[in-house]
Image: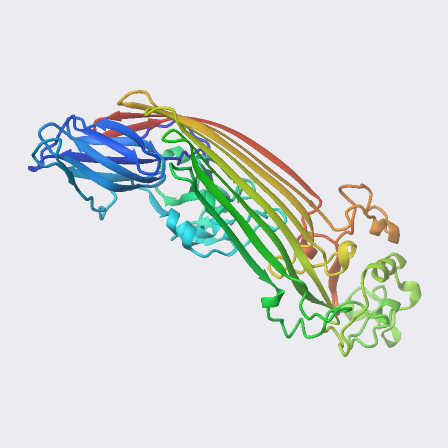
Length: 558
C-alpha cells in the first residue's frame, strides 16, 4: 500500500530492490520470530530481520545483485538459499519451509520463481547485467534496449544529432507523449522534459541493470507515460577490471557505385577517409573490505565518417541567365498577373539587368561549378565528398559505504563531453546538407552533460525505514553554423542578415525552387542545423521517502 504527497513527474525512486517472503513449518503453519539473515554475496555485507506472527518477513533497500538468505528458528534446522537475485524496483519473493531438527544442522533449500507476480502490479521489463553486457548494440547506447520492450515504439521525429549527441531515444510508451517518459539514474531525475531526452546515457560497463515500466507504475513516479530506471555499478570485495576497443575504417568498407563511382577530386580514393574507434574500460573493488567500495569507467569515441552527396548546382551559363539548356520555359514574372498570362524570356535567357548582383556574389563565391560531365536538365551535376567528425568522452564514478547494517551511503558523478563537426557539401561557409545520410546535419555542436547523485538509506527500526537522495544535472549544448565568425550575406551585399557577431553570423539558409532547385547555407530545412543555439539547463532534486512495515502490509510516503 502506498500513501504519497502530490508528486512531480519523474520524482521516482527506483534505486533498490527488496526480498520478501514467509517462513513456515512442515505442516504449513507460520513460524514467528525466525531470524532471517540476508548477505550480499559480492560484498559480504549482511542484513538481519525477523518474521512476525504470520511468518512474513521483508528486507528492503538492497542494491541489485545476488544474495544468500539464511533462516534460523528454535527447534528447526537452519535453511539456506545460496543465490537469490535482486533487481531494481522489484520484490523478490522467497518462501521457505523449515525442517524439524537442531539449529546447528543446515539444509540447503531452493526457491522456485512464481508463475504470477503477486507482490507488484506494475507491467515492466528488466534487462539484467548479463543482457546489458552481452547483447551487441550499435554505438553501445544503453537507450537502445528501450525499443525491445512491448508497447514501446520510436517517435517518428527524433531530435537532431547536434542537440542529442548522447544518443537519446524519443519513444512512445503505449501511444502516450514522448515527453512524458521519465528517465531515472540511481533514483534521481535524468530527463530533459522539454525535448524528451536522457541527459546522461551511461556506458554499458557502468550499468548493472535497467527496468522499463510501461503501465501500473507506483504513484511515487508521478504523472508519466513510462519509467526507465537504471542503476549504476558498485564495487565488490574483489578487484575487477575490463577493457575494450572497437575499430572500423574505410579499409573494410565497400564503395557505393552510384555516389562513389568517380575518384575524389585531387586524390586516388573513391571512398572518403572513414574511421570509427570506440575504446575504454572500467575497474572496481574494495577500499575497505566489507565496508567501502568504488567503481569507475571511461568510454571514448573517435569517429570520422566519410560520405558523398549528389547535388544540382547552377552551371556557368545559368549564372549568366542562360537557361536554354534546361528544357524548361522561363517566364518574365512581371509580364502577367497569372502564370498563364506571362511571356517567356527570349531564347530562355534572362537579361543581365534582371539578375541580382548580391545573389550572383553568393553563388560565384560559395557554390562550386558542376563536376559531373553529361548531366542535363535537373539531373545532379555535382558530387561533394567529406567526413563528419564526432568525438566523445564519458566517465562515471561511484562510491558505496556500508557504515553499518542500518545505514548505507552512496555517491556518483557522471560526465559526458561531445564534439560534432560536420561540414556542408558546399564547404564550411557555404553549408548545405551534411555528409551523414542519417541526419544531413552540417555545422558544429559542443555538448557537455554532468550529473551528481548522492544519498543514504537508514533503518530506523524493525518497522521504519527512510532514504534521502540528492540529484543534480546540467545539460549544456552549443550549436553553431560553419564559418560562425563570417558575414557572407553582408559581404555579398544583402543587408539585415549578418547583424550580430554571434547569433546572426554565418551563412543564412537559402532555398532555390524550380528547375534543379537546391538549398545552401544553414537552417533546419537545409542542414538540420537549429543554430545558433545556446542551451544550458540545470536541475536540483532532493528526495526523502519513508517506509512503514505493518504486518503483511507496506506503507510508503514521501
